[in-house]
Figure 1 (cartoon, rainbow over the protein chains, first blue to last red):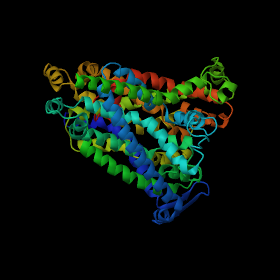
Figure 2 (figure 1 turned 180 degrees about the vertical axis):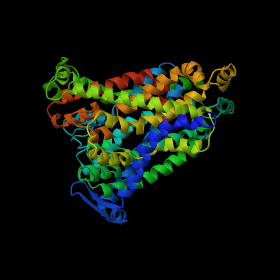
Figure 3 (figure 1 turned 90 degrees about the vertical axis):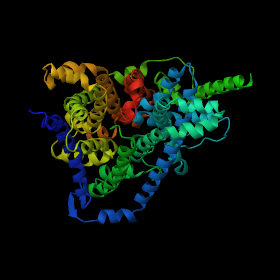
Figure 4 (figure 1 turned 45 degrees about the horizontal axis):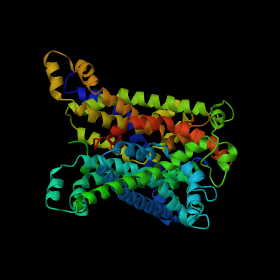
Length: 286
Length: 279
């Protein structure tokens, strides 16, 4: 086994496995998306692009697209701002920093489905929830966080922000610690205020790291399943149904694999764009 | 002394805000754990009770081999995740090593491909797996879940170990090879011992991600191979009445990840972003 061929021997088992479990399913999905393939009715009919055309006229799909957009933008922006705030604060304090970090990391480690069920039953419950108990002092009537179609999406986003802000915080904090000292010292000598230093030095220097956090969060929000499904199952009605949940319902409730695959292919396209951006701007390969 | 006082005020308010955020962010977990020690009436009490006589009844009920064998699900999680991890290490380590040490055609494209799996929608893998597993009777088997879990663990192991391998100076290996060692021997005698901490970190980080997984296990398992997170989900039918038991099962599910996560805190960042950052 010469040095020239050995790389391929070393990577062969891993890539053979990966091809079988990812490329093959992807191609399978592409194929399914051109079929009317229903496991319940055992139908297999070639329908060409009909599934894709159908999506454009499907109110539920367009609604899920809108929900995915609102969910992703609102959650990611809140998490970035809050995460940046906490990371900056952690950088200010000397003593007790590790304790703070440990406590603030706990939501990230906790099992999403478990915490979402907890939020639903113990925290955001209309009549028995902890949040409404605390709010009783300010608002006289209980708020139906997850039961009201107008509030449900915001409430689910709240759970996402609770769980994933620590993710952004950890990444940005690691980024802050890796920044060079010189620009900050120069700014202090020049008498810059805290806000000026933050705005003109910290944020621009941190930009690549912010992009990493942003790309991961956007990706995971589009794919979000556990939190939404456990809290609302997409309801009430279709108020919190995202693209991912609609694909899930089509595939595993209606057993309409062809139609579900068409949605999945659209999601693959989005994920391809995001991973290309990540590889280009934030790749660990140097 | 004005700027000094200003500085002190700033630090003090930083502490206050952090303390406040810590309370907010840990409250739901704290409340869940607290509920797991409440008897049925206390768990249902409104206004919520913060002080009460703690009981272990919920844990006894959940762990007892009765209606819902939660212990079995917990062990299922352990078996499936360990097998998934072992396979990922067995085939992922050589690949990670090749990426870090050797140059070959298509290397960059292959690395991008591995990375892109982290971004791909999991449901896209699940649909074909589900259809094929139905054909071959692989639904509700440990090996079936283990196989689809490779879409999570294998890219993670390859990328993380690549990051650790690349930190080992090439010169060390080259020196040993000049002395007549084969590359295989160098790998086992020199490189692996040097990255032992990275191996442990990768293993624990991968386990954290696998342990919390729901979607695949939710669809592909039933009474035989159900994992702990799916088990908690199946308590939802009872949650209106048995909140205490649900809380106990939830706490038991999260415990290993919380403990290992805190131990691995410094390495966590690396795992979260596939090594794009070092903690």
